[in-house]
Length: 640
Image 1: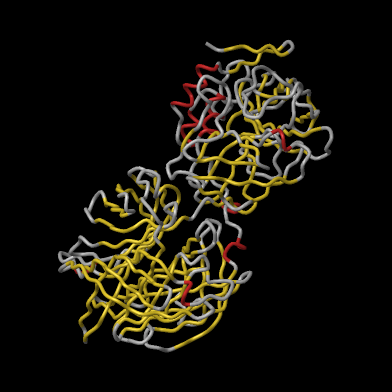
Image 2: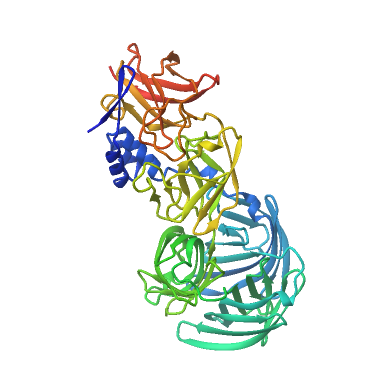
């Protein structure tokens, strides 16, 4: 049954609340499904409660977050015609400025090089960096930690007939002077090492605990796997740290360069004195006390993977692999996301692979991430007070001995990425429905939010996601990894600019800003409806002269009588802005311009198609009388 709203002498149909709730439960998931839907408001609901097509040019994170100086380790493995070459490795320092960087790196053979290059943050918020110098291996598809403290990347590709996997991991260096005494406490660490003896290569990985005493002494225990066997070992080493945060780590005859992060929570180390044997360590400080198993490893992470993968049945697929991607973890038992992974030669492509794994967390912080298909287990430790990092290694596979590192990457709100949900334009108006793009904003699998139980008011928190504008909670329509649809609070009226923060899994994003205007109309192009039949206007079902049409919009500003942010309109409320409309560039009367009953932040404009309108396509244009510009327009199919 349809509810009829009488506005003057003309009837306009709207969907009653019980049908609107049913729409939310049976949301179409693609634009094609939307086009098939015969109910105009169902089409609008689909747009609001499902992911809109992202606006890539407005999704990039603020580049200022990566400016500064970092220590880094880089590691390259290659395979040519089925032959594994010894890895090359380096430890260095890099400083990122506006669009360029300088670096200095020491290779595992002791050679030191320096140079410069350029970098950019692409529309998908990934960082790319390259140099003319072969000493800097480069970054492709790099990901940045939520606070700019870590950068992970690398690249994969073919060089002649070689298959390459490059690993890059950087930590922000200290801003003030430090010393040996600043590196103290217990760190979980992962290590990958390779040694060569003629044409033979030996690989192993290890996972363990390393304790620094602040006086230059180290004790460690670790599980070591070389695929053929697994053993438990312990030992001692020594270290020094200079005022800049770098130094040396010595264990027997091995000598590694070491660097400490600005927050003293991460260290990296790399061999610098042996051309035939390389070792790389990454360690993260342990959290004190017992780990709450169900509340850790929750949120948005980057996952970086490196290792050789050997398949005895098919030697053509032997070789190094490199993988990097976005995942979200539910804090309970599963992770989802997408990994960009380079398959070994001869495939020679980078693929986006869905990542879906189950995991368990013990009270000691030990994690096991299990592949659903191969049975491989990435065993490691969560670190930090809220599970901000993870280090792990594959210790149970006879064909794989890779390592894995995960760290929080979000939430980030994109730079200039707050736009109206209808046409992706700025500025936005108070009370309007907006789309916010970024990275790590919510769970990988999107979530439609809906009303609070027993009310007609949208929730302001769902799936551990919330959004604030000038400290005001925003009513949510939809949350996902890269997008949030919500209502801009009416309370921001009169302000030219507002600040926004997103929060996901207990982590708050850096502040971003959005431009505000009193009126900023956006038209939902796929939701123009015949007011009498309630059917969408399409080429197959065109409008006819004399028809009354409903155009669904957002951004028409404040309304008569006022309204509460997040509360569905209970009846027609006209917009205070005096709207005007044109059909084929001739002024026509606007019968109603205001809120759509039963929805939050959704407006409609009702117009009668003039009797003299010729068949074909009619151009509808909308604006408001306080501005000479026409705000939005639409081409509407017209029949005889």
